Structures are given as C-alpha cells and as structure tokens.
Amino acid sequence: MKSPITITDEEQYWLRSRDVSDSPKVGGDDYFSEHGVARPENVQSDDLPPAENEAVREIDRDALEEQKTIGKWQITGSAERIDELWPELVADAEAGHLWAVKAMTTFGYEELAMYDDYLLTVYTPNYFERHDVLRVRDHLRDAHDVTHELYYKPDIYTAKGIVADTAEEFGLSAPARYIQ
Image 1 (cartoon, helix red, strand yellow):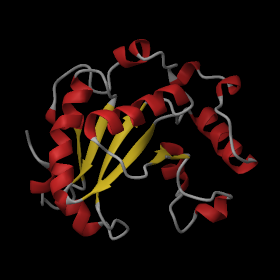
Image 2 (cartoon, one colour; image 1 turned 135 degrees about the vertical axis):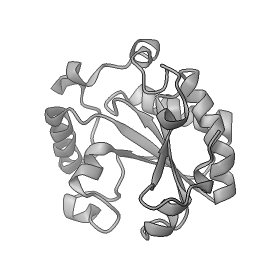
Image 3 (cartoon, one colour; image 1 turned 60 degrees about the vertical axis):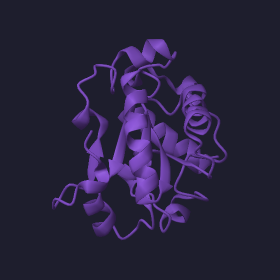
Image 4 (cartoon, one colour; image 1 turned 180 degrees about the vertical axis):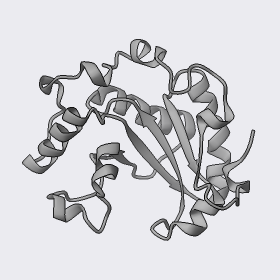
C-alpha cells in the first residue's frame, strides 16, 4: 500500500483511503445502516447534539442548513507513527469499522506550516450522531492505542475558517466540536 510519508509530489497534500482502496465500504452507503447513522439529508433540527453554548449551537444550525455534517477525529504523530497507523486504518475502513481516512503526505507536512506533526484524519459522515463519533474514538483508542487527546473537527468548521487563531472570533474555546 502506498505510504503517505513517501509522497513528496508537489500539490499532493493528502492521501485518501479511497485513493488506495477499491472497497465499496470506504466512504460507502452501508456505513449508515450498519452503525445506525442518519444520512445528512434526513437530519432535522431535533437531531442537533447538545451544545456547550449558543455559538456552537449556531454553527450546528449552519451545518444542518448546508448539510455539512461530515467531521473527523484528528490524530497527530510522527512520520513513523502515521506510517504505522495508515494501513491499519485503511483496513478498518475497508472492513466498515470506519467510514473513511485521510493522511497528510510529506509534501503536505513540509508545505502546511500550521502543523507541528503529521496528521491523520478519521471521518464520520454525521457529527450530529454523537454515538458514532464516540464509537470511532473508542475504536481508535482500543484497537490502535491512540491515547493522546484528540480533536474532532466538523467540516463546517473548516469551511468557516475555524482554526486555533480564529476560534475565539467564533465564540469557541478551541477549533473543535469535541475534545477527548
């Protein structure tokens, strides 16, 4: 399997699980029924997760309106640790335990100054489904010994430009929906 660490090609910041696997399970439709996750188009305002403040609630409402419910756990680590986890997490996506995975390439690491470590992102299709978000976190901890603090960042946060330097402007304490 192609390692993200060996990729130094210009403009290839990320390697996605669907780029290295033909499995229909990777980012596939079966995930929703297998894990009891509502599809984004079926989510209603009653499905919004509990929010710590009105700023978080407002971003959740925006995500609902724009159907941007995808989010990801962010795993940081050395090149060696990411290289070790990458094939294991892709295999988990192929088996349907995870929805999809993306890894920072060496080019991305060298070009994206905001990161001090390499980054793997493990996606869930609907961050309103907290049971699934936590199930994936538990899987990372139990199956892969990911023990450090993890940040879960919905794609709506990325779309709005919410990063460490701007979180406060949005009324957030961190650029993440869940920190665990």
